[in-house]
Amino acid sequence: MPKAESVHSTPPTNTPIFQSNSVNVAHSATGATSRRRFLSQAAGAAAGGAVLALATSQPIAAASAPAAQLNESTLLKFEEQIFEQYQGATAYDDEIVRLAEIWHAESKRLYEESLAREVQAGTYLTPQQRWALVSGTPSQREHDRIVALQDPFYERMDALVKQMFATPAHTAEGRRAKATVLLGVIMDYDWRGVDAETDYPELMARKLLIEFIGGEPSEMLRDQFA
Image 1: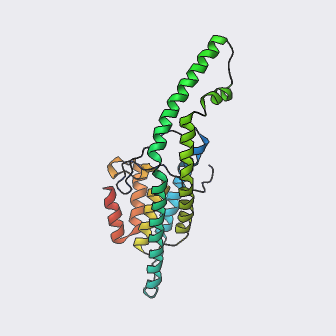
Image 2 (image 1 turned 30 degrees about the vertical axis):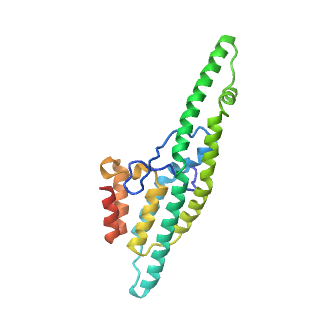
């Protein structure tokens, strides 16, 4: 399995924490959107690592309380900045979906017309030649242009996520911030539905993750999925 080095994510649907009107569509036929595949490749490893990190976090001594509060403040700031970038990137999703639907319908029509001509002529194109005929439509070019507009947001988000997860969480609120980013940005949207709509493996892993947060922040996050 390839190692994922970034956290490009399709937007969540039916999520109580991170509201989004976008939907996940199959427009990975273009290379411009292949970066979205990173998420599914790394989801299991990311979840396991995060749960282990939260489970083994050591409590901070009372004398270190000011340092713990500074640490918590840093994580909360990362959380805010990460979701600002995430929202900036996903703001394009509705238009990307619309253009993808137009592009796919047009490509299918052009492909079928080309295939019919080949049958009549008795000569057949290679798959690469057929793809050259149906690609490059105006809707596809605009789709790819808008997808590229997401890149600066995702690049900044990737950098912030790496900094955040390199910062130890020593308080329940700090652990909540990291878990919220894990569920809302890194993991697939299958992890974000309410309990009744979530598959058993994801449901149990999420419950364990939230349990390790501890305290009132844990209860608040748990209530979001009830």
